[in-house]
Image (cartoon, rainbow, N blue to C red; front, side, top):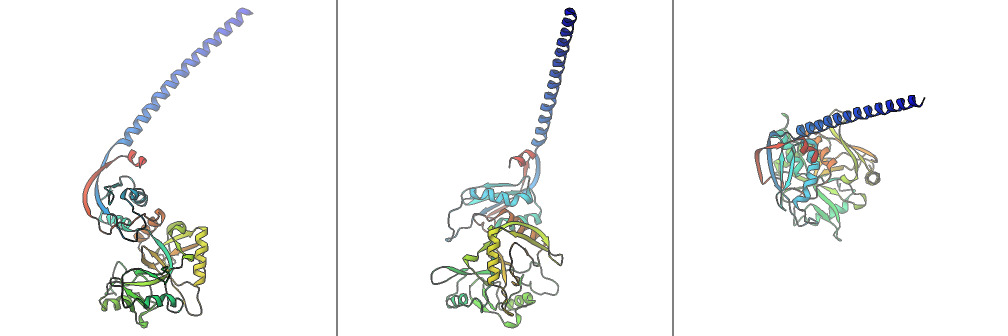
Length: 363
């Protein structure tokens, strides 16, 4: 019996040794294949790809009103965040010195380069401001009238205490001229007759008959006949109802009721309260309506009439192209830049660039 037990025990030990040996072999084989796999993937990721590219160098725009000195190094991360979704792998953003920043785009396509330039020179400052009308905002117009003898292109309108109560914003024009239009129409309708020459700051009174519905083409024709290149319209600034890009929790591309590209956005809780206060205080009184200006970098994008209280969700609609909407969405999602770049690059050249998939993961 004891001899049988010893034989059984020896057999078990022999089997256990064989199992351990087999397990060791399997582990060794597994480690070998794992190392080979990692080496292969690393080699694949490290493969360099050379592509045609465009080098742009911009300088930071400086002004006396700038609250703090921003270096180009501080612009690197915000610009990568803004440009990364559209240009992704291969995009390079590098500080040249304190004043200049280099952007290398992995493309030479003119359309792509134009989109990039639009994204680069936009500071991304979004504001929602009511467009002033003489009846509801008479006090702001009185302040403007006091400066008509000494016109200035300065945008802010200040009261006696030095507080900003108004801001002149530039009315954009359509990028393309239709066959029926001799001159590119404005992007928005205007109800207020008070505008100013963007270049000189001279206040102008528009003829009443060209205001209101379908005024975009009429006003464009009139200002061209006066030798004026562009006009600004007055918006009202109320700090207690200030709503801007920082109040958005979501922005995305969508379409309006006619199928035209538009921007959809959702406000934060705090932004919803301020937008409700702004639109409620400017709600219609009889036939008198106030336009809500949607302003990006002091450019009036659209100005719909305020018909009811706006709270959580809204849309920016207008005669936008899909490319314009995509750019706006990217700017709003990436947020405001710490400083603005000068509109024209100091250098632009064609080049080539090499990058690997591994570089993209490390960006």
